[in-house]
Image (cartoon, rainbow, N blue to C red; front, side):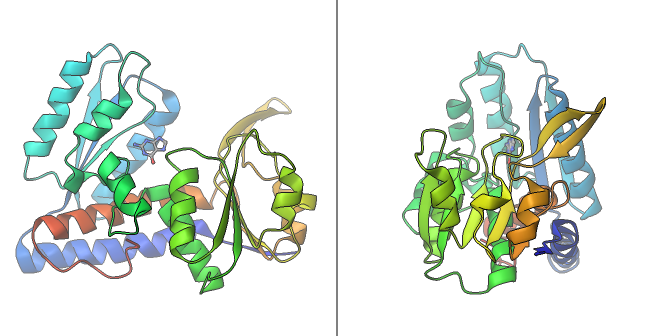
Length: 295
Ligand code: GUN
């Protein structure tokens, strides 16, 4: 039976370091880091995320600016909100919650964010910096996954990592980060052949496909490290339950270490968002960047 990677306590540790930095920024420089979150429409899952972001931002001592906008907002109106946040010196980080309603051009909105405030790391400039090995704002979920992997494994050089999923939010930046750590990286997706065999060859499996329990234990090499990014709601015995993309019960029997769902990657995402906001705030004020924040 492998060990369970406790994302909840790992995230609590990171949030505590963030809170210490916030206190120091206030005491020494009179600066309060500010994070603006923009939510369009009323998607219940997004509302939960946004509420949690606000609570944790304030708990860390930062300023939280929440903009809840109607689902029918026009592209121009949304772009005007982003422009106002870009110009606001109290806002150091801007996050536009995805997905946006279908009539809006997400790429145009994300690319309108000032890259210096792009705490999600989704702006095309951030993506290019990461891909070309330059200092970049790193997307929060893969950053959290990498922190947990390095904590568990130390040096990742030469390890074979299989990333299942090729989204812009997780799969692609995760692969870039692992490459930066000298892993041999395979990106797999729904059209990949022999996925089971590929996974069996991996020292690290990162599952980010959004399909409940898709990866069974017999796809995992004994001793491998498994990071389960999936958060899937399933109905079972009349109740709703959260499960990952990995069949946890069988995979935990063979993996060396595995993240649970919930309580694994999820809590790390918001903690990394707070860490990125501190980084952006320090850069904006020409202050040294804090250590141990991941980017
Ligand atoms: N939707 C799901 N995850 C994320 C995220 O990390 N950032 C944003 N902006 N939207 C998301």
